Length: 187
Image (tube, rainbow, N blue to C red; front, top):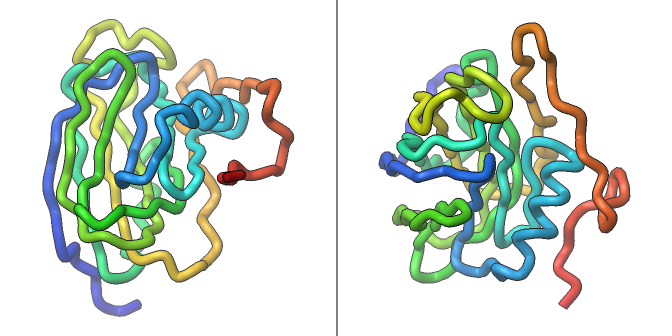
């Protein structure tokens, strides 16, 4: 790729993130699946999706002023993982109204207009100060969502933040999770 790919749509929202997690939903997700996706995200950090929802585990317990840039591309953008501390990719469908919802437990969801379609979503975060309690309810970490049409290509492996002096938290085995399996809709 010689030319830099530019977003065809770009916006920024502020999400009140709590309980160390947030969820992306393209309008087709089932809230009853969120706990299972969270268990999968904790078992194979930092995220898990079922094609309709993605749950992302955050290093910080909370950030009530989380800035999230949302960018939509017509193809996979140039890689810039070295500029981010945590990165993961999942597949996500956005339904006909074209609304992507970002939510976190106990806080109000925020929405972003995104054209309907099947996407790969890359979730990137940086500015982390600690795993768990960040020492403030507004620690300043920032996130970016990059979406592009899903072409069935292999998803890039996750990148986790290695906290100086502490490393990376262990994955948390769940009762419903088997290593290597993926979350699927069984309906």
